[in-house]
Amino acid sequence: KTVDKSASKDISFVNTYTAKPTSAELPGDKTLTGKVLGGGDFSFELYTSNASWEEVKNIETVSNDKNGAFKFSTLSFEKAGTYYYVVKEAHAGEVIDGVTYDDTHYHIMIVVTDDYRGQLHSVVHIYDNNGIPKNKIEFVNSYEIDQTSQAEVVLSGNKTLTGKDLVDGVFTFELYETGADFAVSGTPKTATNVGGKFAFALDYTADDAGKTFYYVVKEANAGQTIHGVTYSSAVYQVTVKVLDDGKGGIKTEVSVNNGATASTLNFTNTYEVSGDAYETVVLSGNKTLTGKDLVDG
Image (cartoon, rainbow, N blue to C red; front, side, top):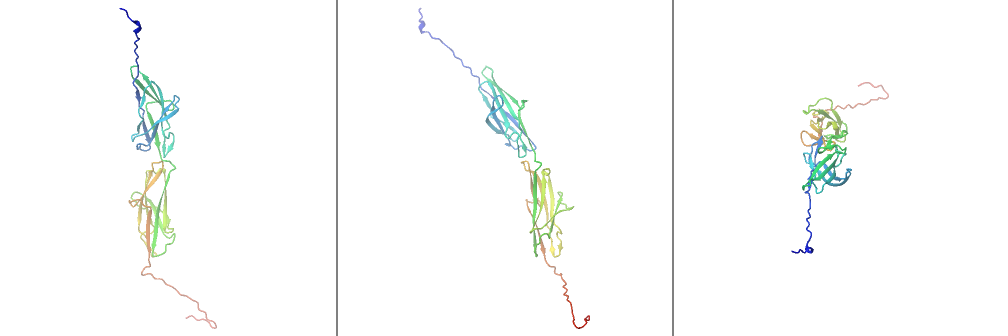
């Protein structure tokens, strides 16, 4: 049989090979000493990088949960190769509101290989900015109160006198520092009335944070009547709590007589003439006689 070779054609088969993509996770932990984490306190940034660890592009910023954990979105890879990233904390190396931020820049190298059986695989390598290998990404911040922090409490009051004009500097008010039982002893700090007011200034430092101070404020001669003035018998029990303000400083909470916060301490005195009071007036003079000696009587 004769075969027409002119009608024959080449038959070819073309195969393609594509490996399935792989992925990598970049979780991290946040630790804060000196203060409790609240969740969302700190931010962490993921940058693409070159092999010299120069940041190229910020591709994601995330924050920590209340347990300190954070994680960037899953990274996907469709080609074999080596990929470089930098992970750092926002405000790295800064001190803000009493918090010193970790200045570590983590260098992340992700090596993606093809097993030539249809699957890519990734291996994550983590180094700190000194090139030391690390098992995980971890940032440690510290919080402390600025030792130069100060706070002032002014215990101010009004002085009222009925029945008589009030003169500056006439009445004295006493401030005693006591224990929690408000028992008065020792020498008080004193102030006098000026323009119907008086005040005590109390100063606190960072070393006082977490402490509670107790005071008693009263008028000298409290409850007595002297020269027609009946002195106020009011006694004020003052509690001052010195607290961490959460921003590297201190703040105070003031309570008067175990009640709501108050800034004014009032004392009212009364003046009146006693019903059996009397006053002796002596009218004296001189007698002169001219032209004759003066005889007594």
